[in-house]
Image (tube, rainbow, N blue to C red; front, side, top):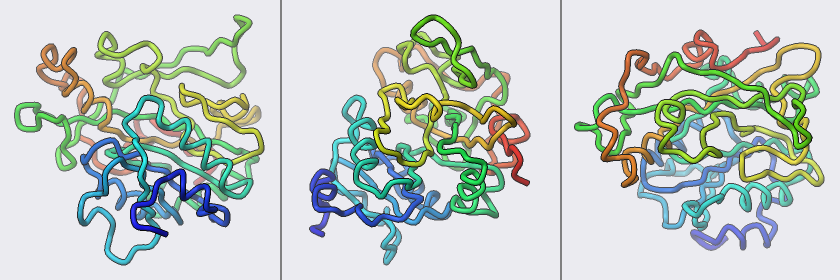
Amino acid sequence: MTAFAAFEDHIRKGGLSDAKGPVAIILIEDDTAVGATLAHHLRTGFKSILALSREPLPEGAIPEGDTRVTSLRFDARRPGAHVPVVNAVIDAVPPGTWLYYCYNAEFLFFPFSESRSIGEMLAFHAEERRRAMLTYVIDLYAPDLKRFPDAVSLSEAMFDRNGYYALGRRDRQGGMHERQLDFFGGLRWRFEEHLPPDRRRIDRIAIFRTAQGLRILPDHRFNIEEYNTYSCPWHHNLTAAITSFRVAKALASNPGSRQQIADFNWRNSHPFRWNSQQLMDLGLMEPGQWF
């Protein structure tokens, strides 16, 4: 493969035709924490990572000699970039492949992720006849915008320990979807006036198994409704969390919000300890029947 090949060319030439999951797709919008994002997901146990960026990755972002990361050219900054990428990968990989997608400066955690791999977790999830997993996007932010004007600090990351809630999700006929909720909280809730309504939810179906006819939608849901459910009908299932600096970065840099936000800290700000137990203790992800 030519160095830094175009994503579309990689797909067209069959670069994913024999991919073995779980496969991670990381949309790289800027240079923030690119190396840290890749390293975190490599430790999580993904067999293959597609890193999509408009420019070549920063030097040293990929661990030397690690062949699990494929760097591909794609403009991840364009609106709705996840839609054509994820749908193209769905079509390109073998049916039934587990996929995951996120952006740079986002970090996946699932129950017991410090001692168990993503493959182990998904094997259990598949045994429960689940083909998708709800993930909550938990906003991270720096404690001091004067010291960290881009709102990013890996060493001093903060998050909201309270202020999360869910509302029933209505279908097109005005009824309620079964086992589906819209979740809110974090910076998207506290500074919702700076975000359009369709970007205020914190739920994302970020982990799923490919199927014929499956399509991701702009709102991070899928065209097959069962994929959008948080659990099966008979008991609670696993959920995961994606801790993310993405909203903090946007609020700190966009002209419409940066002049009006002096600080992200409030009474419910709490240091993030970079472990899954903290997220489970606060109810920000669910171990289900997996112990």
